[in-house]
Image (cartoon, rainbow, N blue to C red; front, side, top):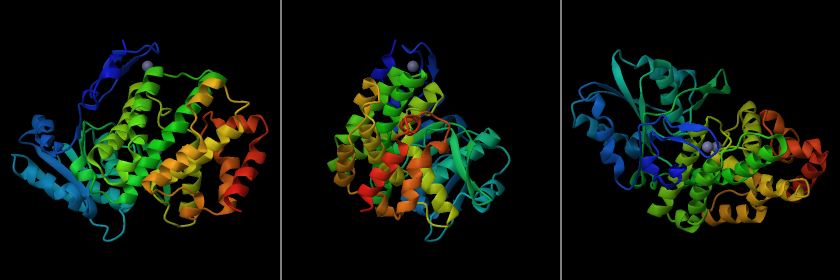
Length: 392
Ligand SMILES: [Zn+2]
Ligand SMILES: [Zn+2]
């Protein structure tokens, strides 16, 4: 029944099964190909589009990382390639009206497939164009930096505000560790942080199941947990850009997306730690400051939420408490890979931090440990306690 638990990462594409949770799950992705040297399999993925127009999207950074290799693979076959490289100079590409508009203006009629080469931003832009045009897209991952490769939301910037547009899942995902292990270490830290966030996200999911009877798929929990164990078990190796450790990281990031895709809700990927991260991000954007990479913020928020679970342990059902990691454990893992650990490491001031604990639950209408603390009138005391510890 739950044979999906025995699938390898690359077998997850097109999963279609009756689950022990009582629902039927399907995953609408044709190809997930991860491993060392798998870029060469791009031609196999693109075979149905042979002889047709391919729109290749990258930016000047991701073109250098893998775009040039992808371009030469495409040009070696009989595709009609439209190569669009968005140039953001030394800065990172911001997915605003300018960038999204440029992407769309370069789209030629009768384009058969979009091949995006990049990580967060390029992936979000390509999946948005794919969703609006119904042209399938394939993503060649350049960094294991976030879990959005297999996710149907595309956060883009409209009139200075970040809006999460509903988009589409990719036709294919190619994660070549030879490419990704060369990614900037800060991006690897971000991917690691986003994965650690799943520890508290799963605890929150169980909490919601126990407290408010929310639907929970044990198969998906097990899938994500197994992937998490591999990542936490290889933290030291990840700091050295070890091939297997990078593979485990991109697999875990992909697998949480797979779990989300299977059940159609984002519970396996995000809980209260993502609420804190979004709260900080909105404040940074409002103040015109660089908002930091998503996973860096999630990584910093995770031990904070773990501490709230600890402080709330008398109120939290046993099953959920069993899943919650300890603050020390999460902080230890962040330190092992060399990632930022504390809110002060990325310029979050005392007031912002305190307010984020008090008001983080408002970011999203979803039951979490923050809401339990609010309902039991412990939130203010907890916010003061953690703030005073971090900002002595
Ligand atoms: Zn299920
Ligand atoms: Zn995330």
